[in-house]
Length: 240
Image (tube, rainbow, N blue to C red; front, side):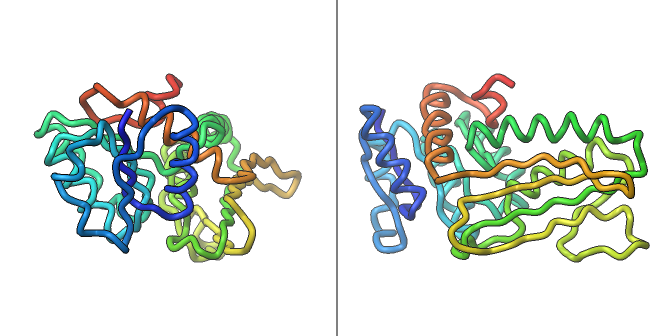
């Protein structure tokens, strides 16, 4: 499979290393240093594009790939206020698009555990819930896209929480779901969901040891989406 890497930072390099080991070819590697190569003439050789860039660039990158008919998966966070527009364009063009706030197989299993726990805890109002996420200092957005996904899934199933916030709530704002963000090195990504009461705490945690899990999941998604049409997520890839 011929792959276009849009965003050639640490994640892009990790994906490239794994893709080459699995017999794929990298037809282009786009970064801020060679944006002139990000055009249809170069992209036409790609079977699929993998996009890990910046919140400011992601929307335009995805649009360009869909406009010329290249399936694209994106793991860039911080831009998803425009995700509905991308999904509409994908349907109009008969293209293929997959977004995930986190491509790690372990994290996507963690998402499902988080949903189920929220469903169970819905009737136990003595427990308050909060999220803590920590990443390396080079991560630009906060809270992480993964933390936002966890929060939205909790809010969907926990009636007493209505919105997430990065401002630590006082005792009057019990409907706010607090997300605490920490930036420290080295940290590939740690997410903790805690339900607390006066009696005890219940905690679930996912800790990434390296970028390998993210790269492996992204490549798996790229292999899966090739030849398909529609809007997808990692649940489709993992069949969960």
